Amino acid sequence: MRRASAIQKESQQIGTVGDLTGVFESIASTKVAKIKNKVELSKEFFELLWKRYSSIRIDPRTRITHIDDKEINPKKVFVIISAEAGLSGDIDQRLIETMLRDYDSSNTDIVVLGTHGANQLKQGGIPYKRYFQVPTSDDYVDVSPVIEAIINYSKITVYYEEYISLGVQGIKKLDLHSRIREMSEKADEGEEIMTADDTIFEPSLEEIAEIMEIAMMNLAFSQAILESGLAQDASRFNAMATAKKRAWELMNYYSLDFHRAKRSENDRRSREVMVGLKRKKRQRLAENG
Amino acid sequence: MKHQKDDTQLRVIARAPFQVYYEGQARIVTASNRIGRFDILPGHADFFSVIIGGDVAIQTDTETITFPTTGGVVGVRGDEVMLFVNM
Image: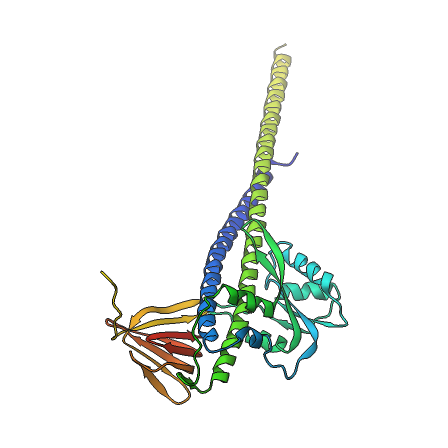
């Protein structure tokens, strides 16, 4: 049996791991709350932007799906939004497995966001066309370099991790153009059309509409990135919660082991004392007798 | 009491995708487009403009709220001003 002092030392180390995972768990939980708030704000922003946009377009839904028709790439593009760091459970693995079920290398390019996903693709020998870091900041998500890289593909499918609840995260795929249509359906309709007859457009209606369309495309993509971040943080939270639970289970085990070892050491000492006393008694009897 | 429209005030919404800069009534909104700096006051013509990077100022009865932008779009309709910035 191991010595009680060695078990106590290991138990303290496990306790520190347990405390650390507790800290990570609470960081992940705070991040989840913060991202949820950002997702809500961006949805409101989109609805307001759509309200103004729809007032300057006669048929906005037809137009927004045909941004830059001139240089359409006949191939499809799959965009994977993975985690930038590890410690996010198995969710990135599930994401790539889902994407691979639809993947045909002859007509599809892959664009990957996040180091974790890029590494997993490399390990699996799956080529990707472009890699981007997951764009994020406290104020806004700048997705314009990614949009620029994918805008001319005939079909853009985004694979990302979906936050369902703190305990459940799924994998979602979306067609970016359809997403804009879906989002616009939730926005307020019925705005009166503004035309050049009654409104001043500076520099021109075309340029303003294009800026708004690109902004909406960015926003739809940013929302996928945010939702993905939310799912990754929730997955991280779960991984940490499991690790914390395991640490406390180990602590209980070590505590039992420690007490057993301590009792065994005490028993051994008692036996040694008893043996010593008996030996002394025998010696005394021998001397007297 | 029935709420009456105040002709001396604009209704302003100034937002970035993940941030609300201001929502409420204001007297003057100042921003810049390619032509230069411009003010929007109550009674302004319906107007849509691309705004360039720089400070946007919203003057209310009690204070002036200023925030930096990298650009965006402003739409004025009636006395409602919507600023979409940092998109």
